[in-house]
Every structure is written in C-alpha cells, then in structure tokens.
Length: 127
Length: 137
Image (cartoon, rainbow over all chains, first blue to last red):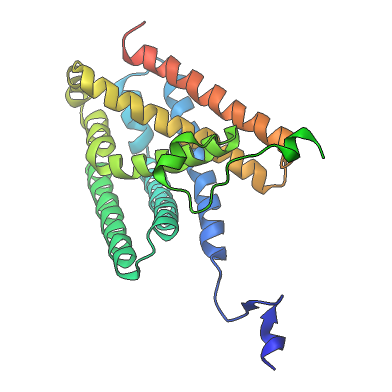
C-alpha cells in the first residue's frame, strides 16, 4: 500500500507544491522587471536631453486621469519584492539548516521587504 | 583509460571555506554564485542606498542636482559602481537563466559560451557606466 504512494524508491508523494509557484513567480517577476528596466532606460536615454523633467515624468505621467507612471512603477516594484523574497528565501534554505534561525531570518527578510515596499510607495506616491 | 579519467583529482564533499579558495569553478559556476551574491547585495542596498538615491532623483530639480554633490565623495562613487556591477551582472545572468529555462543552449559548450557572454557584456557595461560615473566624459 505504502509503495503505491511512492515516486521511485524513496520519495513519498504528499500534497505539497514542491516550490512550483515560487519557481514560476521568480521567472515571471524577472521578465516584468527586465521589460520595465528597458522601458525606463530607453525612455530616459533616447529622450531629448536626459533631464530631471524627463526622468520624473517617467514616474508621474498620466493617461487621462490614470496615474500610469506611478502604477507601472508600483507593479514593477512589487515584482521586485516578490522576486527578492523567493531568491533570499532560497539562500536561507540552502545555507541555514537550523530551523529556528532560518525562520527568524525569513521573518526578518519579509519585514525588510515590506518596509522597503512602503518606503518606495511613500517616495513614489508623494510625487 | 584516458589521461583525464586516470588523473588523480582532489575530491570535494561538504566543501569548506579553505577548500572553496582553491576550488576552480567553471565560468557558468562563477556566473551562478555571483548571481546570488549580486542579488543579496541589491536586496540589502535597496532601502539603504538605492531608494534614498531614487528619492533624490525624482523629488525635485534641486534634489536631482544634489546627487552630483553626493557623488563627489570617491567612496560614494565606489558604492554606486559596485551596485551598478551588481545590477548588470544580475540582469545579464538572469536573462541567461530565462533562456536556459526555455531549453535553449543547455549543452555544455553553449552554456559555457553564454556564461562567458554574461561576463563580457556585464563587465563591459560596468566599465562604460563606470567611466561615465568617474567623469570620463
């Protein structure tokens, strides 16, 4: 009976996600950030003058009443935070094997990232 | 038996720090560990250095201009240069991983070449941005 639940000779199959979501999220957020980076880079470099006004406008432009610049930056930054969470969590899981310490580091990582997101949101949405 | 197979090679299991210093990673391995190092670096620098600079750059024309003064300190320049390298390496190596995930270039020869390309592109761009940062033009 128990052997039927095993994949191969050792691995017992149970109802977990095996990190599939993290794997996909890490890649999707990477693509979002890469595209947004190129939009910012070319939006700035191929503008007339590379001035402060052009740079600020990339984050503050509106389409009608929609604050598109701020929305895009926010979405890209949320992608960054989620991406960093997956990556830093991988580091702790690879190198820190004491459960309590690993949990502590993961909680601190989340606090660090949430704080960073709020800090960014404050800068961006005060413009 | 071929020479390469019969040659005595050091074995590394549960690698320790003194061993790491003598261990020669292939180029793809160097790119990989630096991808992790640069990611961790950016994670730590984000609220400490990058966001304060971002705030200066977008808030007002005066604060935008004040970055020049802040960058007059060579140590600050060095910090920014390291972060530029970290970003560029993470960016280039990351794009390589996305392509590898599409099952493109997974064979040994191509993978080593693309790892070399990651270093070539990221270091060349770091030099270009670095020269700009240190006022070459």
